[in-house]
Amino acid sequence: MSFPREGGRLVVVGGWGVRAEMLEDLYRSWPGRVEVVSLDDDLVTRCDSVADVADVLLQRYPGPSVWMGWSLGAQVVMAAASRNAKAVSAAITLAGFPKFIADERWLNGMSEEEFGVFSRGLSRETERYWMHFLLLMINGSASALAERQRLKPWLGQGAPVSSPNLVKSLRWLERSDQRLLWSQVNVPVLHITGACDQVVATWVGALETQPSSIEISIPGMAHWPGGVFADECIAVIERFLGSSTGMAS
Image (tube, rainbow, N blue to C red; front, top):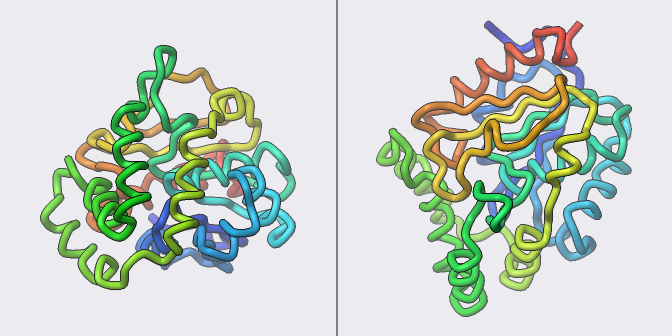
């Protein structure tokens, strides 16, 4: 199985504090043009919210494209899909979440207490807590040891975003609540989550979505969809894009 021959353009949006190029295993074989977007200092400095980032990227990539986002990047992709369905022909979220922080009505997120500890630690020791996040995203994975080896080169490069902007974009995770948006967006959407995700618990089945949205939870996968789970994610994406629900015709 392979991506559709005429893949069109793919816009890939990375997550918090992570180079989007780390997702290369997922888009390397895409048959069309690929635009890779990291939430870097340029974007974070000029934007004050996930919605602002979506607006900037829609201006940058106005033509019809498949948009794929990981973690915080998934929220950017969904915001773009809700704003301009002509530009976002289909959306794919990887370890995404409509709401990052759990509360009494949303149990599928990080606890306020855990987030507070991380947020305060990040403000004091940015590099240490950035590294902690990269390790946390593979924690619980059925292939955690192999994933850790794959992460070593990226850990060695350090954070790709300045300390102030890591703190700034972390606040977006705290404030953003896209539950209504995710339940109403009308473009074809594929949500891929990890059954072993220990950053945010899989929310599959916890939110009523449109018939054009598909939710898949991958056994053994934690918060990171690349590495040893890339092939399985690609197979799910291929089925989605090749179906009547996806954008391929």
